[in-house]
Image (cartoon, rainbow, N blue to C red):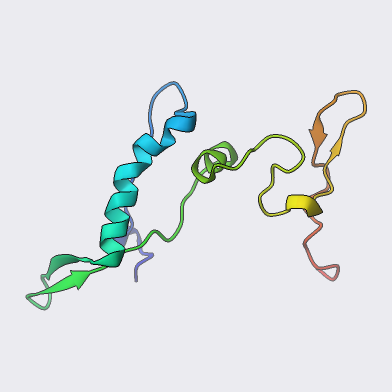
Length: 116
């Protein structure tokens, strides 16, 4: 029930021509404060179907971001050999000999079972 479109809402969109980068906390602080209050103590809410009040609690289930946005929100460096927070040191990324850049070519299959 909670994943139906009418129960889903967009909480935050950062608009503008420039990325907030390290100032992302300025945008996220009010959201974090509200989520803490909703999870720890809840908010008195009226149920129109039952015609009575109840204490509503809420939590953040997921976020949808692109890879650079994920880096800003999680404070993870998205540059270099260890840029994938899932792979960490197990990555097969390598430096290109002449380009002096990291290549993640064919790294996406390393965690898939061999029988897949």
